[in-house]
Amino acid sequence: MKKPKFSIIVPVYNTEKYLKRCLDSIKSQSFKDYEVIIVNDGSTDKSSSIISKYPFKVINQENQGLSVARNNGVKSASGDYLIFLDSDDYIEKDLLKEIDKSLSNNPDLVRYQIKEVFDDKDNVNYEEIPFENKDGVEAFKLITKYHFVENAWAYAIKREFYLKEKFSFKKGTYHEDFGLMPLVIIKSKVVNSINYVGYCYYQRSGSIMNDSDYGKTKKKVKDFYNHYLYLTKEINKTKLDKTYFMSFISNSLILKITELKGKDYKEALTKLKKDKVFDNLLSDSLGRKIKNTLVKISPRLYYRRF
Image (cartoon, rainbow, N blue to C red; front, side):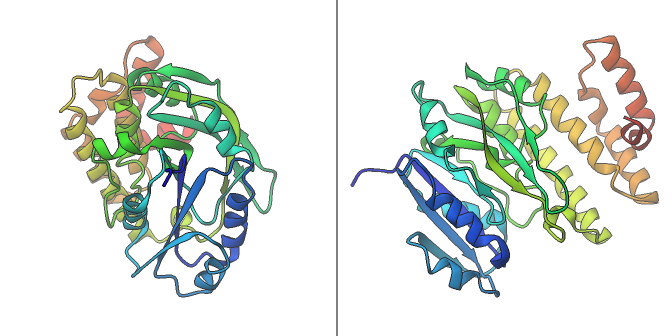
């Protein structure tokens, strides 16, 4: 049996309000050589009923979180390229067709462009300068200039490459994309980026990333720091130029701790200084040297100002 070109992995957990839009956007694709793997992560709403109306492969599991759902979806995938689609988001009808056009050089990774979708204001397109045939280090330098970097749903990933590198999302954590995708990017041998705005990232209130519970905020920061440690350990196992990589993940971590309050923020800042996280920031220009000095003095003041 012929393998499909794409495996679209859709984790689902209680997204009945948005799920039909998501799955319809897959059915409407102009390029038809794909499989869909829906991982129903213990939904308790009407999601299961909605899923049953579509001719897609379904994995039902107890609620274990997004990372496990994605990992299980990958295990069941057979396509040449993996695409992760969150069930409250959706894709434009020509996304697969446009990705397929960019596969002639057999890339490990294809990046496409993002549209943020809102209920109460105009949508925002994030368009970038496309490129092709870059290695992971060069691609990382280019991609980190833009708005979305580590989001797994911004890429089509060659499944053979993904499995060979034994990539997986870390279970039971927030910011699991940050804990994996920087490695996926930089370890890729060939990366393309297309200018098609094909992924619609829906901003809904009450989602994981919009939760205002401070207890969860503290866990998110802790998880982020642990992802940083993992990424550092893994990049140090390679012979790749890690300059931009370390600057990006360090800058991301410094920004993340500004979400903490009072004593928690001060303790985190002290820890980052002790761990020499600030030393990883690029300082190859006068502007960056000034920025680094200001950030080290007070990340919170710097990021609020700039």
